[in-house]
Image (cartoon, rainbow, N blue to C red):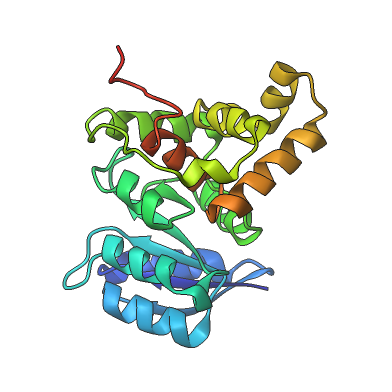
Length: 221
């Protein structure tokens, strides 16, 4: 059973999500809250599989709540999905950086919401590589220059190459074709890189690729 926590300050939105999710045999809503502080508190108490987190809430907003959940080692198995009204919300990039597994637009189709919950509960990033690339590139171009970092020193040359390709938006199959590897080998390299870099999922790996300069979307023209 996939256990879901709803965090949104609009009662009607919560009611709609709750009704949809609880109608599924493999999903149950274990709680709902109207602000970020309550979301963090309930996440720590209940350790849900997935938190559907509105980015804009009174008091502690969804971004800060996601940051606190992402920084809590005891909540490493809790996956946050950001809910936003716009598909390129200005805070989404930062949310991915601090630990969100993906994002959903609030008017997404019900079947897509259900699929998203199941994908994230498995531990996969919600965003497809191509969508992740578009999202991160949009905001990385407005951000500061990539910081000098030794984070990537833990990677082998092959792993660095593969992280760069992940950052460019390639799937594991596309990476395998580009480097003449089997898809299983490409997936293994991606997984090892994620473990070494201490990132939760593919979305964070993409963000790290931009931040460290492996991928430079706008600064170099």
